[in-house]
Image 1 (tube, helix red, strand yellow):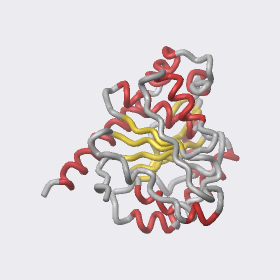
Image 2 (cartoon, one colour):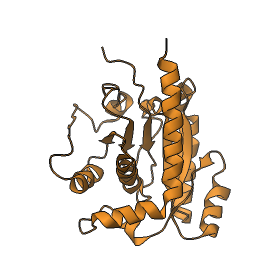
Image 3 (cartoon, one colour):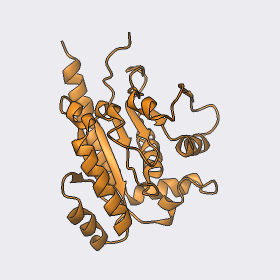
Image 4 (cartoon, one colour):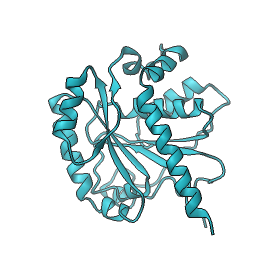
Amino acid sequence: MARERTIPAVIFANAKGGVGKSTLALLTALCMAAQGKRICFIDLDQQKSGEKSLARFIGDGRIDVAHVEWPGRDSYEAYERLFDPTHAIDNDRFDLIVIDTPAGIDPDDLLFLSAFDLILIPTSSSDMDLNATQRFVGRLLQSGAMQAGERRTLQIMLAPNMIDDLEDLRQVRTQIRTIGTMPPVHYSADVRRAMQSYVGEMKIVEAIRANKEFFSRLMVWLTQAQTRADLASRP
């Protein structure tokens, strides 16, 4: 029987596509790895764009990939039964788990969301993205996953993405007030193209440096989460 997971886990989720879930998940994994953290990256999207991009940036021989298949995974019943994908991970191998999810995810169907420590919800400041994100946040807060998550130290935060200026950020914070807001990820060609094949390693480094406030906040959260886990594991 697997030990209870003590590794902090962050999941990027939003039913709206095109808001930067995969890009931010990838940049988070790369940024934390650059800080010496051992990262387990889980890609739940069937397109596997995050996994493919991560393998390209890390290089052959420096990444272990495990593919998981289960019967009927596309059916509603399969999503109802979807297990915590982190449950079998060895606590001694990793410092952080980063999970990317597909568009169209529905919190009412994914009770495993309550297993995570931090849910980051990327959104841009466009009316279409904000309206869709607001609906997703509302469903998430009322879902069975969150009722289960009340038994854990679970945080839910907006991740303002592709932000041009303070007015963009104000729009995000004004429209969605029910959860906290991370520092914004500013719009830049480097971030927007982070998962495209012709972007070199230095461009990724520049994209991370340009948004150091966002990633610094994540690092603070990770340190606090690790401290809580260490205290909880003591006899």
